[in-house]
Image 1 (cartoon, rainbow, N blue to C red):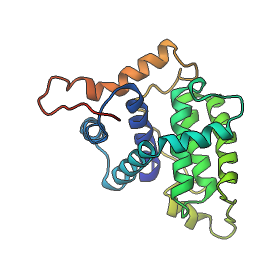
Image 2 (image 1 turned 180 degrees about the horizontal axis):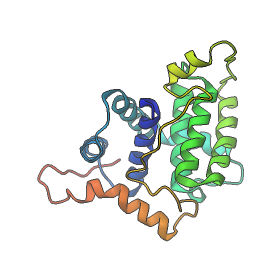
Image 3 (image 1 turned 90 degrees about the vertical axis):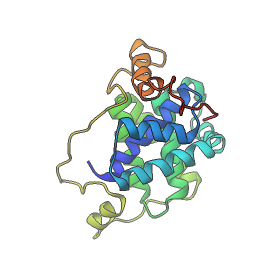
Image 4 (image 1 turned 45 degrees about the vertical axis):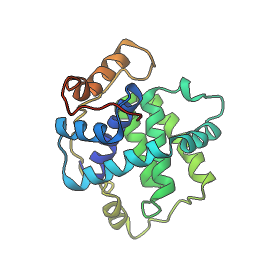
Length: 206
């Protein structure tokens, strides 16, 4: 798995955890990486994504609502909602990453953690958001390997590594409120709940 792909998954897990508790952003980041160490490149991108999404969550949610007709935010599963926030943030703040790469990566993460239906939903919503914010389908002819390298994703036809789904249950998240969803939430929050009695543990607004 590339560093950028791993960073997106780590960011999703932290955003998921942020919805469950009242940790400050810095506490969220510190406790997550203590439990799930990552490489420096991936960690930097994940931290930037988490800070960016949480700082602009209200504006990002406005775009999600506008692009997802007949779907209120609270009706979306936590996985789909946070994958969409992350993908929208990337579309708005990372013009150097091709639109198709951001959407494809978001769809794969959504499918991995939320199932096929979640992936299809994310694909449709992000496609409309990309259109609305002026992200065109960048031509890739003649430079697929360069584009993939810039975004740290595999070129079509190359083998991909297996996915470690630590922190989230890899299935059963399609139905919000289900027992599987609750189990996944407990797993994500485990890195933080275990430290509640530590003197250094602080609470704040996520």
